Length: 302
Image 1 (tube, rainbow, N blue to C red):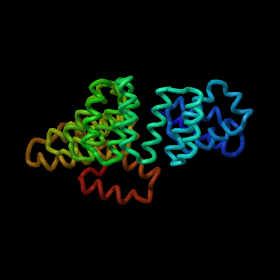
Image 2: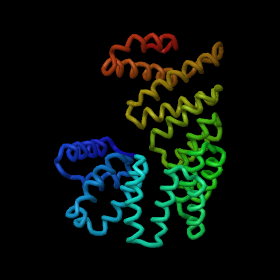
Image 3: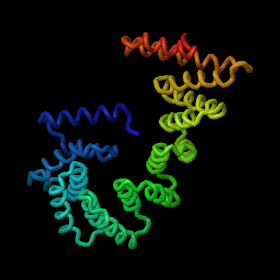
């Protein structure tokens, strides 16, 4: 996860390069370090270095890394001729390289030649069946063709081997949610919360799925995870604050006529409503009256 400070640093450096202040290589190194995907800028700034003989020679061995990054960025931007040229440079420097072979297969993907790309990945995986990139690219091919069952099957097989890949768990969870397979999505988010308990995004997503499923037990659990999201974000997650209010309203409807919820639960609902009204007053005052009427309709206005 990229921090706000890191994001500001990237944006500041990007503006500096765009305005002719230099620092293109520093920008590219920072984007690589933070694992950001800013393909248009990587392509533009990368080519500005590679097309300048003096700057390129100053890179030393890093020239080949930059060629690889430019090739991937060019494929993202559908500049396939540029990608092809960068791959040619790498083929000449590293003949028979499996890493370059992956780039060749990715270029086939970018051209929409799915069968050829799948064959290329199959050939590469024979030599290295534990290559994570190849596994992920095969999932991408399935998704690109709209073959979601195969994508799910491939991701599940991948996660049997690489259980610590948080991005893969999250992608699988999002696919399940898109298919309304909520119980399967819950399992994925549980794995993510167990492995990274301090990431608020996972608590929030888990709560959203529970709320969508509905039912008293799910709503009560959803409220707890919305509350943990609020705690992990220092009370600044608007969506989680709304989630607590919505859960409270739904629970109230289901338990009408029965025992009232405990005082701690009631305090949480009131505090969430108050926090929302305070936030809207500061940042979005034009919609404050709409928020207040919404909370009132939920019987949660402060």
